[in-house]
Image 1 (cartoon, rainbow, N blue to C red):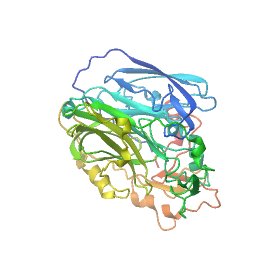
Image 2 (cartoon, rainbow, N blue to C red):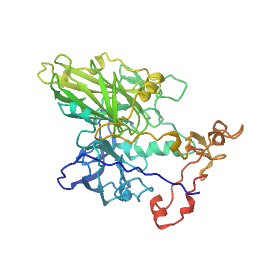
Image 3 (cartoon, rainbow, N blue to C red):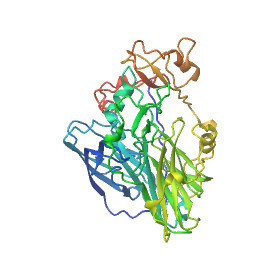
Image 4 (cartoon, one colour):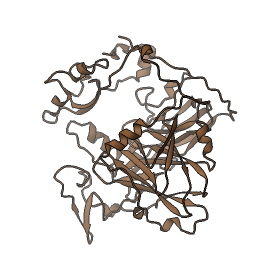
Length: 476
């Protein structure tokens, strides 16, 4: 059964003066760095974590040559949120979906056009777990996404957050995909614009006293226990700390557009600014109605832009990022420096700030936040109105599960995206009936509508374009 896709073409009514193509060269390397004070093998873009920030005009051509100088690791870069409506979907950078990965010690030039509307986006590695090693960065399309954005008379500030593991990206991927399923726990740190601070002597992984470090006492393999890949306390791996990111200086009375980007792999995060409220006006590159809040939730890959007015006395204020949905205390920090403040930001301890953020299991906050995000259906960059029920020709029911299954199987029970009851199945075939690893022979897989994904030998779009094994991709 063929799947029809309806593509909505939205006219863009604002004109932009293009200055020519944006060109850049990304050199991808592996190196040892300590962005949170603990030395580990990372993946850098032009020597940096995160990589260079990309800023382009709406519709501007982007030409980026990626030189993969890693000795034994292939790489792809995905341009998260780019629509590729000009026929450049092959440049999307999703490994084995839109293209083959870039082999070690070789290069590839991505060439595509930015979306026709302003917004906050990102790029990141898209093969294996290379993004957990640090490969990623911000991609900003210039301009006001709505009339609300014009209220930011102080400019914009990019804040990119990453959950950070002390294990290498290869370890993390193999952990999760092998039949034995080694859960790596929560990230040891949260990086803000590539900087964090892991206390090697007093942390959630080790309990230390007078230099003697013991494993956690929890009986459950969780974040309070020593991770299996860390054979001894990491004190011998601690290096010079980069310090916390200092943003600004900001001007008292001015309003700024903060572009929050969750560039992490697994962590749902909440972000709040000490003493300040914020107003959401953009989510995932689309304009929204105003929503006033004290903090913002955003999951892996999400972007939320907010207006924050600098309405507090001159000083230094803490930007706090906390982990949500998992009972393990993880925090990342940055510091906002007011222009003219007599306080030296480098002397401020962000952990001392009193900031109200939702508890890790405060599901009501998450639901309320999501339900209060409304699309902006008026103005020069209005999004298309939601179709009426009479115009809906098909409804998809997306059941998302994690189940044990045979390594090469592509589905479980009776897959369906049309009928939730059929997908859940009868007793004996429900998702919860497939939790046994059968002696560590069945890996844990993620399923959508009870169907999973096995990577083909040929990229999916290539198979469809040249009709090579296209029958493999069936809807039911």
